[in-house]
Image 1 (cartoon, helix red, strand yellow):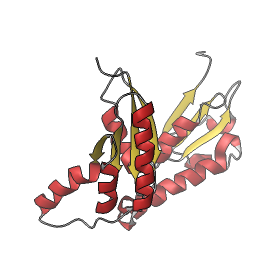
Image 2: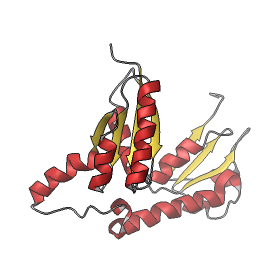
Image 3: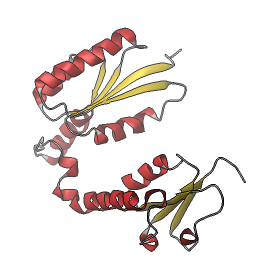
Length: 203
């Protein structure tokens, strides 16, 4: 029988968004296991890597089973330091970059934060714009420019963050006109490309 609970670390020399996304995609393939997920970002020095290893080793002693560690670390010395952890370490960059280097016949740049570089400037700017739009209209703070919203989210109190995060990550402009107790705001009742609603009452 597999251990029903495992500790999982996402370790990155950047924000950790990339390693979280890749790691989550793999973990969703396993039913019946509860994952205690912890992200450790900005591990950009050997000193920080050693501190990270200490945290992982503590979890190895106090947690359930051997920790699983997903990493996206560019620096070879930092990667080797984290590999010394008492855990099952999956180096996602090495898993893919080494075979790609062989296929392309070229060396990768091994540059930190490249996934948010100018190569994806348009997409990155679009996502930031979506976040700014949502903040300006959160909880019905403003009805201005509602016609520019890609998605309108309406729901009871505290029901919105998960939907907003999902929309932001895909570059949509989510607008939450209100956390409603009765009826919809008139500005929200219009043809829209996408709409979503959450409620505590099925009616």
